[in-house]
Image 1: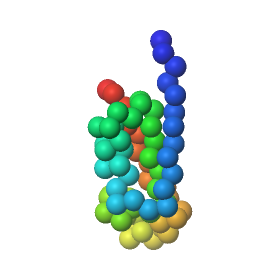
Image 2 (image 1 turned 135 degrees about the vertical axis):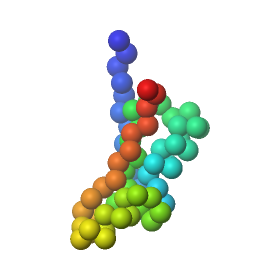
Image 3 (image 1 turned 30 degrees about the horizontal axis):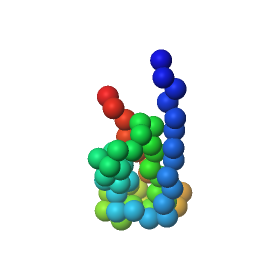
Image 4 (image 1 turned 120 degrees about the horizontal axis):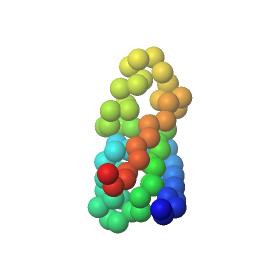
Length: 67
């Protein structure tokens, strides 16, 4: 069994955390990468604000892994 190493990358703002994770996976990012953004401008996480939650109060996270 191998040891999974986690790496978290934090951003103030991204269009989409999922698209960023997919892009980094295509570029060869290691399994265990987590993309976190305080704000998404084009991804699904941007809809949280419409529900009454301030975007800085809900980080959007997507892990990229082999399944």
